[in-house]
Every structure is written in structure tokens, then in C-alpha cells.
Image 1 (spheres, rainbow, N blue to C red):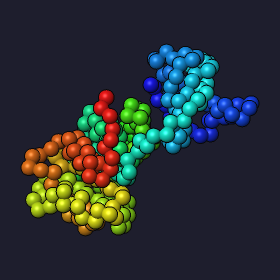
Image 2 (tube, helix red, strand yellow):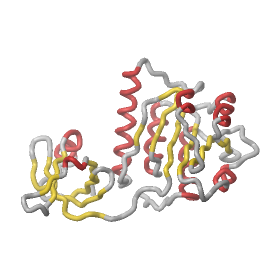
Image 3 (spheres, rainbow, N blue to C red):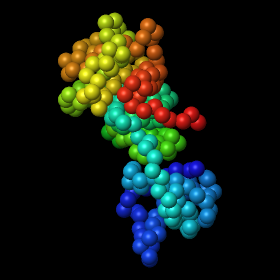
Length: 260
């Protein structure tokens, strides 16, 4: 069943005060009519304000929008029990898009693209960064629809490494981890075992192609980020992100998703 996100302000009551309706327009409205070719009487899923999930029926069509009647609320927990922020070293186009798509599927709440010393991707100006962010946000939106999440994770505009560590706010409920191929003494399992009861929020750091510079790792450690090994093999940046999130969800979250 096709799924769409709408803001609560768009929901309106019917004349009786019982029937709730909303309009879906913009890109989603055009997609419903022109690509999916859905029509009056067709059933879709609607997420209102990233918190209420409904079965809806298309009851009216216009040129670029459809009116939907909310028929039945779905009450099923779909979000992870932990809050994960992914600080991802900006990678080349296809790799970065894969990381965003898969991390959304695995339950990440926020994605912060970070420009490190080894990042090969460059941006001409602020407009260029915003254009790329819009592209990444669209990928996150589509991934959230596909995996039936209630929330669409926010993808931030790319920031420098210095800006990223400057924005960190450490507290006892936050566990910050960086995957580092040169780490020999501390495993991911050890990091997840420490302070188990207190840690509800996680900040995960993944380097771009080529990983982090030693001095970047040093600065992260000074901020309280734990350097961990992901095993004996060197993983690509997109593999490392997916592996780390999946293990974390297995140990602390739900990972109760269905395979499509």
C-alpha cells in the first residue's frame, strides 16, 4: 500500500465533525495521479505529523491533488527505541545515497554529512550544499515511505569536521562511537557493554573513503567519542555505516523490520 506524509494542519473535519479529510498536493499529489495513477476509491496509507498512521481512501481528484478521507488509524510501533544520529563523512554520490537510504531503513533519526580532510567531494558554495541536501532529504523521504516509518529523518546540510565536533553535547545518556580501522584495543562489543542502562542516544561517526585522519580521531577522543574496531577486515564507508547501525539496533534497539 502506498504511503504518504502530511502535516497536521492539512487535516480537516467533515460537516459532522466525525469524518476527517486532508488534501495531498505538491510532488506527492502529482505522483499519486500521474505515476501511480490512483483514482477515487483507491486506498493509501497516510502519516499525519510524523506521529499518526492512517488508512485513507481517495474521495476526490483534481488536476494536481487528491482529497483523502481518513478511515482507520493504525496503531503499530514502527520507530526504534533508541535515538541514533549518524555523522557520515561525505562520500561520493552513489555511496552517500546508499548510506542515507539504508540508515533510514535501519532507524536512524538524524544524518549529519561531515566534510573531513579525506573527503573527495567538494561544494562550490552554499547553494551547491543546499541543493545536495535537498537531494539527500528526498532520498530519506522515499526510504521512510518504503520501510513504513512514522518519522522522516532529517538530513542536515554538509558541515566541516570542526563544526561537527563543536556541535556535540555530551551527557550520560549519550554514547558516541567512531569506527576506526586502526583501533586495536577496543571493540564495538565493549563499547556497547559499557553504561548499558543509561545510554538512550547514540552518535555514530563514520569516515569517508579513506577514513579519518589520525588527528581527527584524536580530536574526537578528546570530545569523549569512543574509538572502536569493526573487525579484522577493512570495510568501505557505506558498509561500515550499515554494519554499525545494524549491530547497534540488534543490541539496543528493535531491528524487528520485515524484509521486502
